[in-house]
Length: 325
Length: 234
Image (tube, chains in turn brown, orange):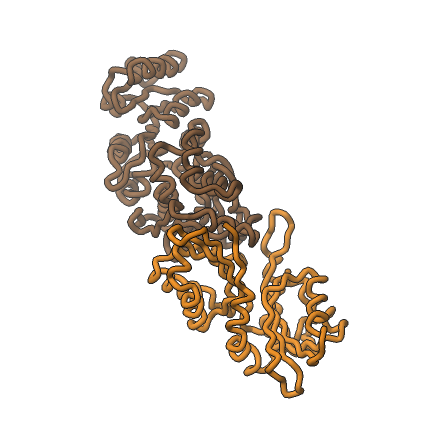
């Protein structure tokens, strides 16, 4: 497949770098300042002539701040089979990610999202566009990074998945794990996480539960066929938890995890008590998704929920699925 | 900062009320002299369901899911009787949660009623009761249909300043739950948030109602509730 990548952060970069290994060809990469587009790419030309020099583009970005001088518009209107949308997640109107997806679908091209905003905030709008398009929409990378949560729900059939629970934010889980293991306060552990690069300098999206809630909203849309946005979610974070909460839990063989839940009662995210040996009590930055199924009981998928290559693997798995159709 | 275990204080404070509400004014529910058809204690229609549930739950380390059980005994008013009754519980892996024992109360047979809440895997419970009987302890009720489930919650915030006794009393007033254990972890001074862990003994099917009360009380007092996950026997 000919892949165009919008967004050149950790995920977009990894998608561009790994696409060749998956047998796909990068025909464009865009960041917020510009784009590099395979200017001579045309339908029907030989495969070994095609593609963007990804390494050169990112060298240029390191030197000048952008992957290229071309416009994002030239990428969006260029020749690609799949648009990978990996710009930062935005709330509300989910722009510019939503607009990028719209452009591709209106051109009957496929869209693979790594950006949570469009499927969390405008799922119904996107599905309308999909209905009128020959292109398809995939977004497994938006939930729990490398873990194939959406694909697993899809393959089982959303109607056979009654509830989903999980640890969906590695930063918050790292902070809670360290607080429990070391008896340290929230601020102390957060500073450590920032030094390690596990937490961003503004960690509010992660520790206030917003990121986990977006992932739950996306899963809720998959289970219910749409109609859910972030405003429907009941969200609490971990910023006001004292170490004593974790030590009291530990004395009782339990721990506290920031758990996202999608059930018949809606979407809830907040710190919850879980048995220390529970499948949901993962440690460090690890994520876990637990499906409660109609016929097969509970099952858990655990793994890396963030990171460039990890999330790119989910993006490229979606591209593979589109190629197989 | 150190956790202060208040269960003893709490049990003594409310034991008469708990005994009245939970023990002496209702008939024994399980009649162990006439076992049910499958060998489970007779007279308790829920026993079978309870015994089969936890096995459905895969535990990663092979550990069994502990569950709260209630045992009611009658002891002669003689020294050492209570200790003799408690030993078989520990020997069979039971974790003692509370003992309600009022010397002033008497059963119609003139003995002292004792209600014991303990936690152990359901499959061990029968052996534990058998061991009590083997030790000549008079067990007249085991596992009422009330208080089948234990629910543990954390309250976080100014739990002391907002009158912990009142918080506990109001949770019990809802009628769906009895507070069986209270553990407080408060830092020195009161301006920093503290945490309290409550173990609630909850009637079958009433966990959500009990949690609803906890949420309401916590909300009024600006306390944070850390709830257990629903479902799966958690």
